[in-house]
Image (cartoon, rainbow over all chains, first blue to last red; front, side, top):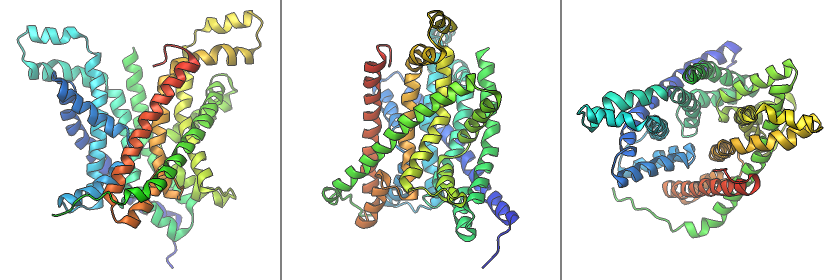
Length: 214
Length: 222
């Protein structure tokens, strides 16, 4: 049997943490792009388009992320797509993030006074120009704190992808734990690594919140 | 492709799904009561306790909020036995859920306590109530009313997060789904049905909490 020293455990966990970071970033970027599309539907003037977007958001916010990941993992192969754990993880988290980000930004759009739209229209801007030049920059700016807060939630959520077989931090730690039988140390270190990733972001979100309050 | 959905297994599986859903409801009911109680103590301690206690509560909140629930669960279930604390899966799940939820609701309850005007406490003290009575009878009810919507959201989020306790073999809804799909080989259909059950549970739970809160805390609770 191979002996694992403390440093072996730490080194392997840190190597696995790369995938956690990468998945978080990819899902955040992907979620932002899809979320932007959902946001357009959510604030559209057509009642039915709006309802579809609300339903999409309610569906992702009203069901467990673990179920969403399972449905991706088992559902996409039925459409004839070859799917690996990392693609299911990536797509699942992207859609999950898109629903939350769209809802956060929508609250920003709603918070803007009606006069901003009117002023844009009176300058002769059409709808898309209004959104691009006036509404969205302000909406993003006032929702920066909850957006960073959601990134923290997303990083923590990547832990669930271990269950569908994506080799990130938690899945690696399960394997190491099975070899070393030192769950206290192993899971303690995993918690610490997550903490080191999330805590600075939490503090940053708090600072943004405080700055927004003044 | 030729794959067609098949829900023929559903009739024989309804009992297992209902049993799993009942366990999920039990988990969230216990967590809600224990977590709310713990967070009232925590929020009060964070405001009025001695300095070491305040620091300890603040550290606890930060640690729990910045680590994944799944890791906390594994730490409690697999890690604590090496300290001599061995827990049943369901007890470990309840403990992990309660400790996790409390970290979020301590902040929420704290915000509610801060929102009650100082004059309420002063008036109650002037009427001759003891400090403990002032907290329980005057400040706390008003604080709970303010934070009730946020508390409701947190409870629903916790119910959805409870899906991962299937990983330590608690026989709740997700665990039953895992068992069913292994038996029927209808993974997608099984998880689809169970996802819809979760959706129904989360909408039902929210509605129940809103109407229950309106009855208990009075009008103005949305």
